[in-house]
Every structure is written in C-alpha cells, then in structure tokens.
Image (cartoon, rainbow, N blue to C red; front, side, top):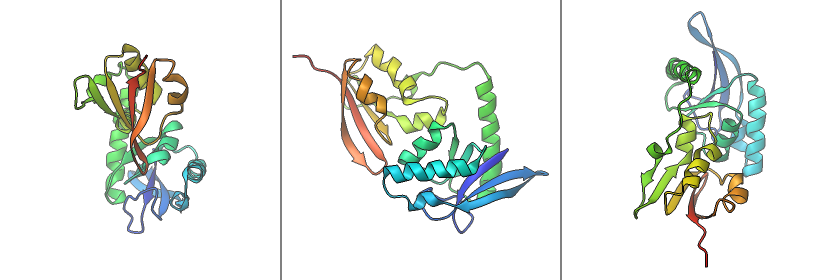
Length: 209
C-alpha cells in the first residue's frame, strides 16, 4: 500500500494550501519508507482555475497512488481529488504517527466496499432546521465518508420525495447539475451564506403564482 501525505517542514501533516511537500510512502519490511517527494505547488495557486490545474498536476505526479493524507484539503481541491477516486484522510499529527492508522482504516474501507453495498439513508445526515420540515445537510461530510457517491446520487432521491420545505446544503462549490436539473424537478436555489471554500445553498420548491 502506498500513501501520499501533504507534510510541512516539521514532518507533520499539513494543509494543501500551505507551503510544504507531498511525499509518497510505501511499506518495506513492515516499515514505512519514502518512495518519492515533491514540492506542493497547490499552495501557490490563486483562484479556482489555478487550483484545479495545480491539483490535477499533483494527481499526475502521484501516479497510481489514490490515498491522500493532509491536515486540511478544503473547497475545490477536495472536490478534484474526490472526483477521480481518492480516499482522503484529514489528520493533524506527525506523519509517521498517522501512516499505520490510515492503513488500518483503509483496509476496513476496502473490506466494507467488497461487501454487498447498502442503500444510503440520507436521513442519518439531516440536521433539523428552525422550522418544521426544514433541514440542513453537510455534503462534504457525506462525501468524505462515502467517496463512491456523488452529490447527485445523494440528493436526487430525497428531492424526488419532496418531504421538506427548505433544505440547506453545505458544500465547497455549487454542483453543476443544480443549474440544469433542479428546475426540472420543481426546485430553485440560492446561496444564503458564502465563506472561502464553503457555501450554504438553500433549496426550496418553486412557488407557482
């Protein structure tokens, strides 16, 4: 098993948006050794397009490695890694302390995926809102725990049931299918809160005259 780690100059896990290195570790005789190491160029990227390009270049340098460990991978960077099938672990610790625990958790994930897939129950992720039938959902949290899913697979079945008045979705960016498919389902949306790498998008049923 090979694991990529974003690390700082203290050999601790670091943020993808802070200067440092990306190291690939592999097991050799029960011990972790560095396979390769290169500069984290994502930290220099400014703007969404530049971040996408820098993350894509990093993915190319990682080759067949699909496990990424960092202290933080927010916003669009998280989305790019997740879109190409990375398993992401967000941990704050010394690098050598986290490798064994990430390996153990990854083996459990692989075993779980090999079992018969269970149907996602979105209700376990819904938080009650201010009023009855108002809900809040953290999309990044769901995708982190279920990397094989997409926002569309998660939300469409719930939206089709229509058993809510207002749904606030916390996400790093507005999914492209919101623009094209929410209207067809009878819903509209607006951004009600926006922070760097984090938005809250409110979905409500279209009000007919």
